[in-house]
Length: 120
Image 1 (spheres, helix red, strand yellow):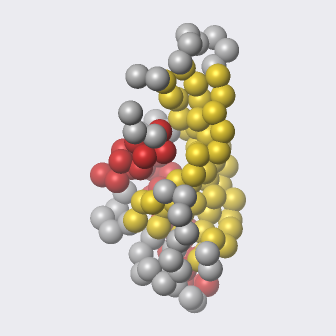
Image 2 (cartoon, rainbow, N blue to C red; image 1 turned 60 degrees about the horizontal axis):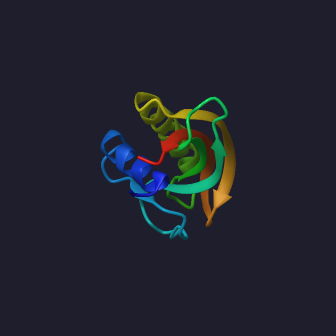
Image 3 (tube, rainbow, N blue to C red; image 1 turned 90 degrees about the vertical axis):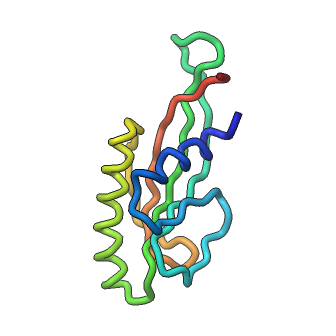
């Protein structure tokens, strides 16, 4: 079975704008001229009331906008963040917080996500 992070990435691909890059936890290349979404699995928790094999998985999604001009990239990032949140909600993915970051020289946001996982 594919990793939950990879399944989430595959689910996001068709609901995000064409041209966005979705990647695992590798290093983002700063000069890529498109929006990048990086997914990193952070934690796994057993669900107390659920049967064995059911759990919650915390994932950090880092969305970064291209551009060296921070004014332009910040405006683009604001739009991209809204687009990303709408995509998450269309897939019923829970998110809890967005924190502004600089990731590999690009302006971005870290978004905390929680998905349900199982052994099936």
